[in-house]
Amino acid sequence: MRADVQWRLRWESELELAEHVELAEFFRKTYGPTGAFNAKPFE
Image (cartoon, rainbow, N blue to C red; front, side, top):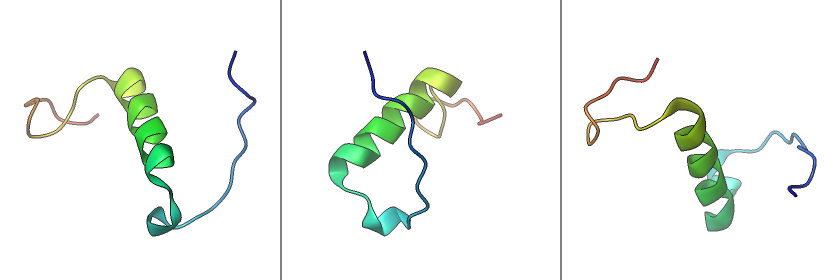
C-alpha cells in the first residue's frame, strides 16, 4: 500500500532521481505513452 499523497511546491532541479522516476511512472500510467518516441501527442 502506498502512502497518502503529500503536496509540496519545489523546482524540478530540487528533485532527487527517485522522485523523477516516480513522477514519470505516475504520468505514464495516467496518460499512457506520449512524446516523440511514441508518436502520440499529449492531451
